[in-house]
Amino acid sequence: MELKEQFEAAVVNSKSLPEKPSNDVLLQLYSRYKQSTEGDVNVEAPTNPFDFVAKAKYTAWDELKGKPKETAMQEYVGLVTKLKG
Image (tube, rainbow, N blue to C red):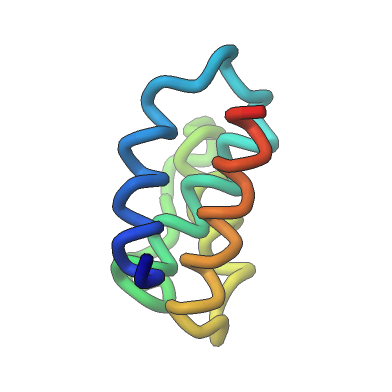
């Protein structure tokens, strides 16, 4: 199966995991998904200092700046596979 197909299957599988991942793992999934589908962060950083979720998501994605989309896809697939058990 081609990487893009594996990634798309992992996206579907991520919605039916046996248990909800920790917030840290959810941020890993989010950031790798965004890096895979959009590349480097392309939005402004959140300006509301009390929007901790938006800030955490932005930071997690920003930390992947420069990572190739294919690498992010592989990491996403690996993470979902691990979580599926």
